[in-house]
Image: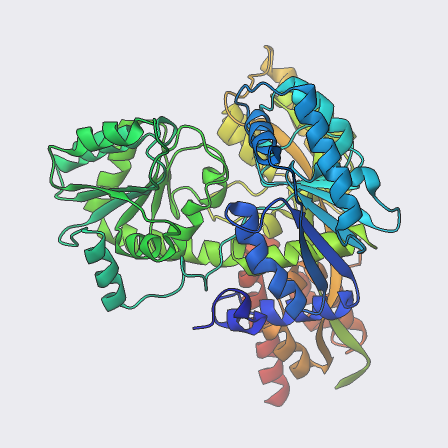
Length: 400
Length: 220
């Protein structure tokens, strides 16, 4: 199967809603000759990179000349951007004048080096923010923020807000993530790539091989939560919900997440809580676990997303795409991806989660019906084809 | 029968812009509804078909949904749900109806309006960018066949947006079939398809059904 940048828009014809691909091609014809440049701080890892790896080739396939530039910083620049990122996400950080100077200087230095001659310049997140100080008036500039700015550290945001307001417009993933600004604020939801390793169809044999490798038996219905083993993702709450369910249904709980950094104790807590029950599997995922996540989601009976605080949590859409009902909290973007009572349920407590899981397990026909509705909901609202059309809409609207 | 002027199917790209206005209770909702751009009223009423899933049991516009689910004022939610944006005549009339409904409700409430314990109401406006779909038709059969194929946004653009936002008569489909094809009865039937039928796909199916019946009748 074609993968990554080898994929063509036409490959999505079999998964996108009726008429979508032809319509995108027509839009491409209308916008042919326009130039779009994306700027980010990295070409490896993170949600920005995942989006651009999919969207940039598809936009080029449509005839919209699209490039992707990367900013380069000094040795301490990564440290600065990490601290700034955390502070914007609401975790108190010490941001010194020197750090802010580094952010600004790096932006200005890169502006002289990067190819930014385009009709629309899309700058992703805070690290390249200051590029706009060198903008040429012929181009339109868009700042795209992939994070939640609703509780940004005030002093830092007060410094950065005037810079953001030099852009022509901004984009946020959710209305509740947006900060007040004097420029237009558009809302564009993240998306999933149905043809990626994470979401492509899998044969039962391939799925079985991966599940065996992860040492997860498939002998009973599987409840699955994917997410870091951190308090914020409430893995212990999920275990408690499972225990309430277990009194009535013979199920298995799978908690899958990336390895925690040294010093973090969340994983030990989860392993301790799970150690007395052979039906709880704690799976520490390998690096770049796309196939593993795909197999786990396909093997699951019900997907759970029970974080106490979350970003958009696109994992909800990836589970729904695999036809799984989702039981999620109201954190971040979770409720915006679901149609409550149609594709799953939102809950606020351990007891609520247990009740909804039991309700589904006792009515298996609901599992199938909700799963099918979820897949169709994702097809219409959260596929990368919709994301491409959003970029085209921004290009058409801002350069009209 | 063939029309001199073909019907050119346009789809539309949609861009949702978050406005600064917000409301935490019915009184603030009333104040903001009076001041937001008319595009925002369209976005939260008629255009709801485009940007959120349509559930048969759900209230039909964003205002009633929010008042019902977040403010938990069922009486006001029901009254707002009864405002029919598709039959009001204009979006300004819809705005007036919303203002009158909330004002009347608050007048009879006699106490402070309940504040939401959940999500505040955030006002949006929707920008539509029309794009040719590449489909056009000169005959009724060509029209029906193209309608079956076009991106679903074309349904929104030619029926909902044309009629309730741009004020183009009874919508582009009915106007062309009545005028260019000279089939006023068929135009009337298309114009009477209820936008509350559900999703845009369901509205497409209703149009196709009416058109197919008319084509069969022609051939009989």
